[in-house]
Image 1: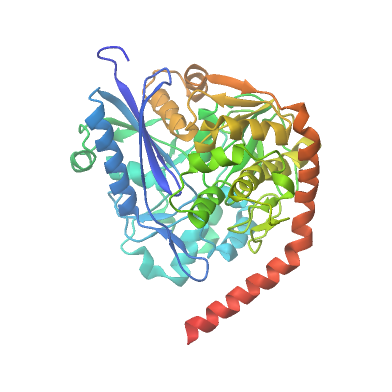
Image 2: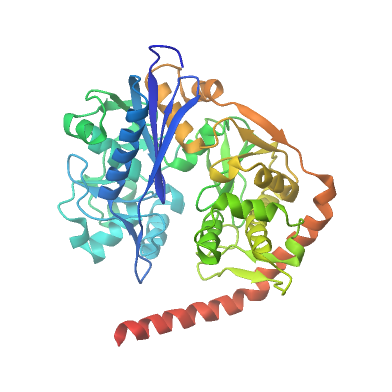
Length: 489
């Protein structure tokens, strides 16, 4: 870093933790800090978070960064989880719990608004959750003024300016589209383009965060799209494994394709479409296993054990459906399962099976998309798993794709920095900023010697869900009945 060079503060408000990074304007990560927060889960599909815990976590990370780096901050941008509804007052302070994207209470409102507007569920944003609470739990909204997404609420708290942020070409339901639903239209904020300067950091928030008041704040986006920019996706055929807690795959295409079990939407780059699928817990599964088998063993130690196990985990296959599953089976009652266990399997085999399952799930999503006519040039990786060479190579071997490893693995955080750089006119737009700030560090081709074993493992993986789905559904009904009975006694 050159003397006197200013830095960008980029914030990713994820599902389980916030990551805050300081970046140079050419995309180099100077420092990264992170802090976690809990999710409150209850019966009937509730999955809420306390926005005050987000703010406290952001403050911890920004103060940590400032203790270690005193450079001038030229701009701030926050991206984040979504659609996650945050009811706020006029200055961005939450008036009730945040209803996260994991919450399933608004399923009926999703169907109703989709039918009313002609939009797909992901284009409805926070509207279904807002309508559900208006109808069934208005007290949870408090003295609400605005319905905002997670990153929009943080930006509003910083600046006092409420805005719904949208990317170029992004389709969303507008107030006129939902006028017949009964939703309180006056609570929907005005629209501002992602990558535009929104306002300046106010005095009280500045004191909380340990940052200078008056620092420019730039409008952000959902962290999935931030990851697309941070991974350098700009052209048809560019693809990314989004990594993270849930896991997912996305590829840009030059035309829309209807693929069962997958999504298709306008890409955040003009003239392109994004195809893909999102899973629920492929990344979280390793954290779960680490806590179950030995809470003292770190992830790196477990991965080292897994690296000693031959490909295919000695006939052990894991289904990573620990929180139900989205793409491509779309079954909230699916369950996780180890299949093929023997007395010869060790902890290392369990870990490797879980890691292999994340790549098998990717292949399960990618296959129908390629069969429908989309091109995948290479698979760019992101998030924590992208920092493991062994895991990256395993993904190449199982998917059969060249894996490209970006210089900055935390692609959502880099995507926030890209938006900030565009918002400060360092680059003319998001595309130009992406071309300048993203660099691929290395590429890993698949090992042809592992193709046969992973083809066999994938065949077994594909057959397991159809064989076990009936049992999963019976067990889900059993769980629900016993939970209800326990609540009544």
